[in-house]
Length: 306
Image (cartoon, rainbow, N blue to C red; front, side):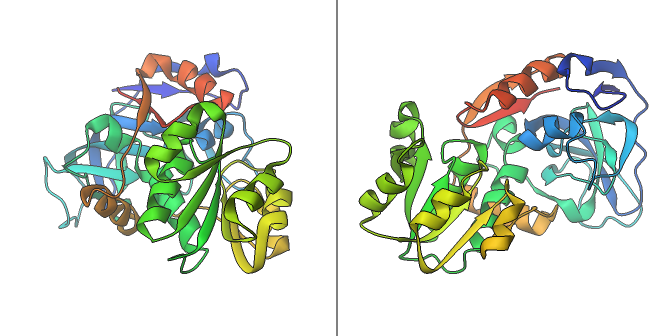
């Protein structure tokens, strides 16, 4: 099969090449998925540069990618949950960095897999699992937000746009930070937009009419702003800044559970969550996709289509 591969840590995305590799072995309690689409996430290119080497074991050569949408084409031993031909999605992170989803096929543990939402295209479904699961888990760290005001840092990005929609479905009033170019987009999702940058704390407090109840950070380096606008007893969480744990917040590292992905899929099928695909790329364009993601200005999801 064809797969995007890198042989060592590198900050030059051009070192990622497409080559023929052996088809994956399918361990017990796993399924073999023919990849139809695989979402791009910032963690993918950070891993290429070795920036998470302290916590992620690696076995080179590595095929990047943790999101997948596709069709089950093989079953490991003892897999009553799925059949050949099932359309599925998964946040396919494994304990060792190695065989990822930017390939024509990938083997994934059953516990990470769930049914693909029928209402989504393959490209939309491929961009859902990691970002949608991250948004859900981060918001749940705030507790009950029904009737409360929540600030979403990075609200127009892949994770942030999901967080806005999920928070609204939970009954929250949502304030989202974004560039002015994305304010109409946030309004369409149900958020009240504010422009990030100098004076953000004052703008949030003015719009909210006082301190807020909760904040979620999908950007990093937003702790000072969060603490400045958070009311007494307010909750906050971040996926980008571990130091929040030293200031009463939760640092989130989403888990590859199919049950969690299924909950996100339910929100899609109920009409409470949509997936915007900003751009698609072939396997040969993985370096270009990573450069686009690293620029940090994408609205919606970038997706690899093998």
